[in-house]
Length: 128
Image 1 (cartoon, rainbow, N blue to C red):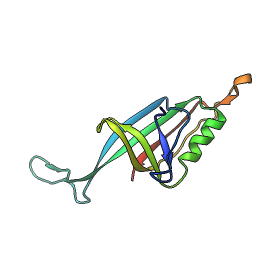
Image 2 (image 1 turned 90 degrees about the horizontal axis):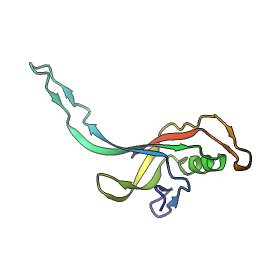
Image 3 (image 1 turned 45 degrees about the vertical axis):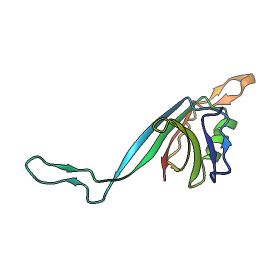
Image 4 (image 1 turned 90 degrees about the vertical axis):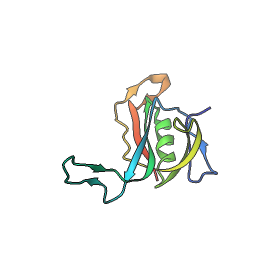
């Protein structure tokens, strides 16, 4: 079973054919605009969490040019729905994300019969 499914809606998810070499799950606290420290004797911090959002850092190692293109096109819309296994929920979830800056270093490997590959492809996705 593929690790990631991506689509423009929750009902149009398609699998990403190459599983990531690394997927780092994270949970970010979103604080109120007036959160922060007060100038008291202990510099008390008021976090004032208003919500939590998932963030995943995803990296693929040595994708072919075709695989890199497939992945970049799947994550190219402004917002995407992603199906993934959430470790906090211990279940498969579908959530809407936006994509951070994408990077695919042009460190080409000419592997003759096996084609040319990128060194890596990586980016973050952040829950909307």
